[in-house]
Image (spheres, rainbow over the protein chains, first blue to last red):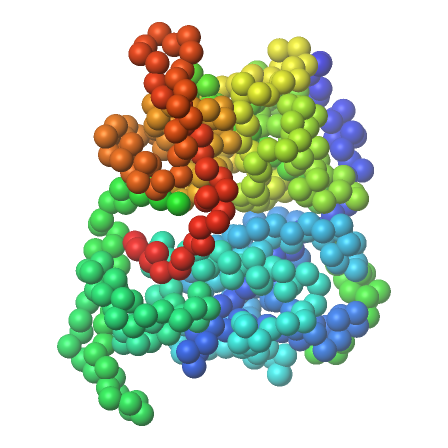
Length: 236
Length: 236
């Protein structure tokens, strides 16, 4: 094959420069012992009354991550949150306006700290397991991001992004149960977590709770970062 | 916000339909105890003499996965291989012809079985750790896919896609060492693998090897599939 110059190449592929790229953000939160996702009422006639993820078209001179952070900032006012690119969805007919390929991200937000910028009533925190019908292929995107989150929380301490800085072991277990959608044995869960030696006992107790106040902990991120991840955790 | 009809929306976003999407495949193989990647000489003047991943522009009516399988089939003749979407790269100036966003996949190929379709000398299996300079942002893409593979092989038995059906424990260890780029303790490695009880002793030995012939095994995929993955493997 001969080397081609860029003009020949440009002509060859110019017919393909007709697509648009969007980002869609699955913004997870945790409230009332349930995993939540922030959704917006779709403003397209096709999808009237349906909820969709928060997203936008990527601008010509914008990086993908920039676009995702822009969407998040515009909708929630938040800047520094955990965010991860998950998967790109490119179904040929997924968008009624033309070929729009979307890059899906999820982010983890502490709902308590979050000064949610509401525009009317269009934004709403939904309980993830109750979400059924959605606009576009957004339900598939939500499921894909939820799967990634399930996977991630059992191997990295990302779940703490969803909790207040001080939390009880009960809250921590509720978080894991909500994300993984399973019931966990209380004694095993506590034993497992305490044995990792990454929780700091704050010698404080919960305030204003309708049950016996529980001990509060924080996660020791410094210690976690210092520990070298060893290889050969091979196991399947 | 008022509901918009699709025409208004189309006009609004029509200026954004000027991008192209490509797929890039990081095709991994294992040979001579080394992790390999299949690369092609770039045919763009800008990148003369540099190696690039195998990829192509996604066609207007083509799904992303379809495009990735098309590239793989065209270059290697292979149809049914392990393939996984990893990450999408959208750097504004990553492609000299315009805004081309690329979706990166990796696939795992058994080099022995692979009837590599060579077009001249343009295709070549490179040792991953020796690859330095590449065309476009392909080195970054290669690294990202290699990281994903490292992660994947310790939690799922995908590495067997790179081995012959019958293999020795030495070959298996060499594979893990090549992928993870670490030296593993022989005794621990064997103990760990045999304790998972997923290797089947074939009561055969290697042929034609320059060392003492080793016992051959195969991986028990049926047993693996039957085992329910339990949750609460939480550990970090």
